[in-house]
Image 1 (tube, rainbow, N blue to C red):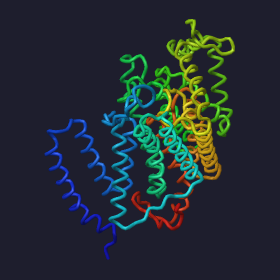
Image 2 (image 1 turned 180 degrees about the vertical axis):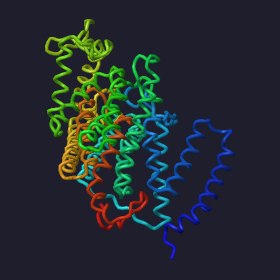
Image 3 (image 1 turned 60 degrees about the vertical axis):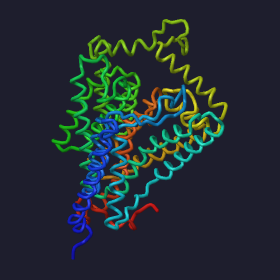
Image 4 (image 1 turned 135 degrees about the horizontal axis):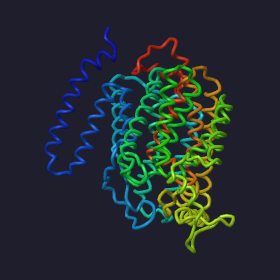
Length: 478
């Protein structure tokens, strides 16, 4: 007897054919009335939704490659705010459209096949809901008090932040095989390689390297590079297979020049934090320590390990020359660092107006630092909820790292732990956990790593089919 999958294969093509014909006719009528980029976004939405409906989990691969290769699209949503955070309106990327399309395709597929897709339970799930609730309530109260001048802006910015969690929950709901997890990790590393190739083509063209479609954001690109370097390094250290180790070591070496040439001090700090974490967790501490000692010795001997531009970029941090530049412990900071310090001071003053739940998302001035921004926007409640979420995340990933016997999974888990530490350091001077180029890869990796115990348990007796969904009554979150 034909099951749901055979029915899907036979009749879904006809259903999609009628749907696509209707969409094409509608777009044909609207084509002369809307802008070209909006038309392209609409067509992309329906195309990706069709792929997700027919191919199921494979729609996630589109998201993986769109993370770094998606341009911005004007949302047309006015915020009604003249200055401050949110005054520029709600910024959308093509990737936002793609994520919604994949989610919509899965919902249609679920309704058509009659399958329930339970979300695998983890300790991180409830922590995410607590953080989301704190952020939403803070924004709602900020709108009532008037600090959030545009309620629409605050809510849409919240939704954009929560979109990263949607991707995480999509992973937990729909990926069910070990093979799918491994393939998605390799897909992320492949996208990483392609982005690095793009960066090499920009050397000599731009002073500071950035990601595609992201001009003026080298700090963001540097944070992404460090995160994926951590994953590659973790796999290289834990997985002894020659081919796997050769590929990941090549990626590490290939990523170093672009990282340096972002000239991002936050990314250099993140890299240092990652190295420290690898010293703590890796069993190759002696090797890592020897490399670090050799590098420091070479620097003391005056060997040119770093490009002059990198050394100058680091040194200029502590070479403030203007009268109003800030100083810490008698050391004067440059204008960029000083501006951040002043923004942090204003953030604390803004927080003191509403210490419990802050001023709401977009309810204060622009703050280029995750922690003072969280404090000013969501108060001590929101900052505590964020800290609880990160703590649960680190504990969960560490538990998987210690218990898994698969070397590829162990390496990925170790890389994610070190990557989280790197992003935490990066977030001292950037909004790293709400920047799409960093947050989406982070939460996608989180979902894949937290699935590792489940897919390992089922690997011996479940079919290796990326579109297979086991009975969600086994381990769902209700």
